[in-house]
Length: 194
Image (cartoon, rainbow, N blue to C red):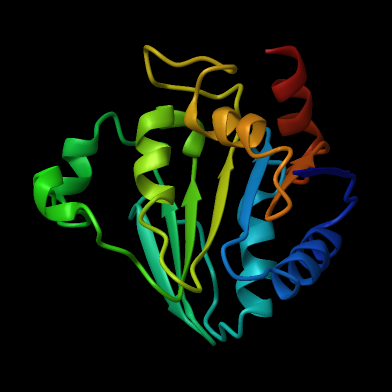
C-alpha cells in the first residue's frame, strides 16, 4: 500500500487532490482516509464524488448517517461517528441483517462505498464490509484514529487502522493522511492540545 501524506492549505486543494485520486481508482481499489476532526475528510469526499460524476451538492451525513449520490456510479457516503452499535443502523432501516448462512456468496457490484468515521468499527466489522465488495466496487474508508467513541477500540486496534496496516503492502490499496486541519485555526489547535 502506498502511504501518501498530503499537506493541503485550502479546501480547494483538498478537493483537487481527491479528484485526482478518485479519477485514478481502479477496480477493487481500497482507500483509507484518516485525519483529525476538521482536517477535511468531508471536503475530500466532495472532490472524489465530483470526479465520479456526481452533480449534487455533497454534504456530511453526520446527522442523517448516510447520503447517496448518483454519478457514473452510485456513491454512498456513510458516517458512523454518532452510532454506538450496529443495531442502530438496523433500526433505522439502513442495514438488513441475515444469518451468515444466507449472506455468504453475496456481493455488492459496481458501487463506490464510502464509510466515514470507520475508526469506530471493529476490524471484524470492516472485514464484513470489504468482503462484500463485488466486481467493479471501490471502497474508501475515512476517519480519525484518535477520535474513537467505541469503548473497546483504540488508535491501534480499530477497523480503519487495521485496514491501513494490513493493506499497506498491497498494490490495490492506498493510504492518504491529511495532516493539517482546514476548519479553523482554533479547531486545529484544539485537536493538537486537548
